[in-house]
Image (cartoon, rainbow, N blue to C red; front, side, top):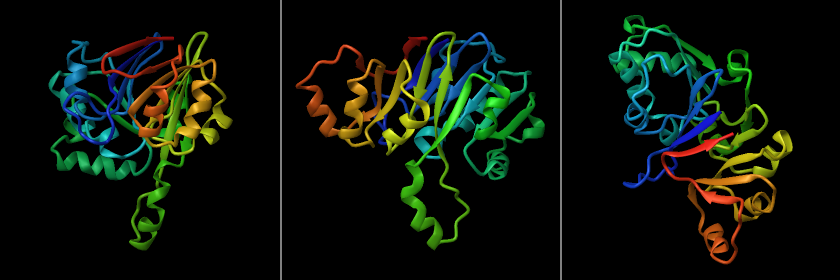
Length: 244
């Protein structure tokens, strides 16, 4: 399998980086993991056939991970895609379908069948993909409850099984030890290096895993990396290619 990092930036727009988006290319399926802006423009630069992509998996509904999905659907529409497209969402699938109508992306007028599923069903279609719920959105619990909002605070990390290796994409996360206790150490870990405290990230750096730091880097970790060189650690870059 090949992972192309189409976007490695944080939630703060950066003129030098795209927002979160990974392109997985494998013998079994081609998937987008998250779809932050400008996913459609970046994806279009590869000049793939309109039917190349099999599905899109959104880990959570922060704009820097999901706002590019409308342009991605528009790209596939204008490109006259024919093959069905699966989209796996963390919550509110019916609300998402209604939002497409607001953008005049009427599902019944698309030249392909759009299949919307909950992210917990992704393994039923793509068996090499596993998802693990994380606590990134729990910070909004009190606000959601006080205002009686329908948000269910769902956020996920993704584990991919290659032929001989495993790759873990943490997405945005606040509790790394809990995730590792569920997944174990993967061969390659693409980890959010901005939200978790450095004390949670340092054990990863000392592990045998290849660590790719994405989504920005917290100041404490940045200072630590100035004093220590790790052979297994690198900072993510847009258009970076990872083979596993």
